[in-house]
Image (cartoon, rainbow, N blue to C red):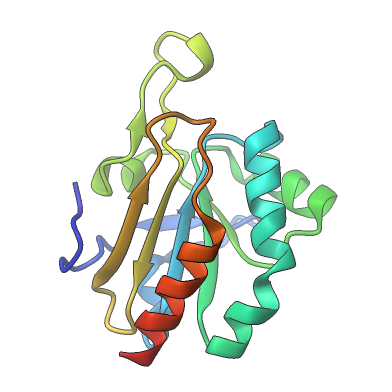
Length: 158
């Protein structure tokens, strides 16, 4: 599990175009990592669309926003296209990121053996140190969007 003050694990995932992307590719600017359980689920759709609608504020701050789920890149692409998500959605189909960040959600939706991601937010500074962390107790919980935006602004000011 990753805690505030620690270096963010650098895992390689794939984007919705199946291109490899490492967390370290975002080095140099603060980054908000949004772990979400599953594309096309109600709360995940609301969360990603809320960040989509607020992306201008993050862009003004020079903060990257990135979504991460265990869904395959094909599902993430369809989800991204359908909801007009305007930031990268990365696929952790091998579950390396959810394990490295300590956000595995076992038996998601009552499906024995299906590991998804807990809903979680990590804010990294430009050097990729974790400066904020929030992990939902259950997949129906959403982060406090105002708190995430305020924490991103604090990290940008560092």
